[in-house]
Image (cartoon, rainbow, N blue to C red):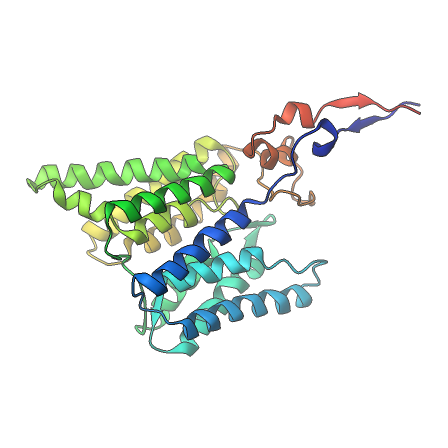
Length: 309
């Protein structure tokens, strides 16, 4: 009896799938080195080393405790690099605590096998809630046009590799419109909203945090609505509550909306390139979104051919 067989990606002559996290690690690592060496970041090599060691060790021990089959340091390294770029504290123990909180969140706070909060955002928000000795960098790194353009281009490369450029650009468009609209209403010069958009922290948030494919809604419509909600929340926190770190607070507050959008606007569950389907990846089409994000047609990869005896 003939049985259907699904063609694997390499069987149709496609290039090997490259995990977008490798691009994120390369970009964030380069930014950290550049920031410490040339931009005088308020984080030293010692604190950066402690933070990175903390997230990698926490990921390792959590993998053992939860009895996962493979230790995968890639996502943990991304969280650690992001914390190095954004978290500021004069107490090394608090940097360690932030790393532990960020990584354990991935194991403890999940819904139907999907992450609910971005690890870096969660670690920063929790630590800023429990102590005033932790704060987030405003990202004012001498935001010249060349550096901002370079960062945006690198970030654009990452989000396109991860198929999450829609949420990034929806958020940026809505946030820019809100900033410009408020300045126009108040009669402020347009240099003010433009200056606010030149923040390195804003670019990092937009291209490396809100675009996290494991914590954003599954469908494109859901991701666009999610980006709009985060932009509105950030504007509310910044201009109504008059609090700093509006982007971080807004993303933390809007994160529980992702499963709501998934409920009413279902889509294909994202999986990292090369990962195997899990019990939670049960909806039709989920096994194809990663390859489609990297420019390979799902129809070809999912073609069913008769089995030859």
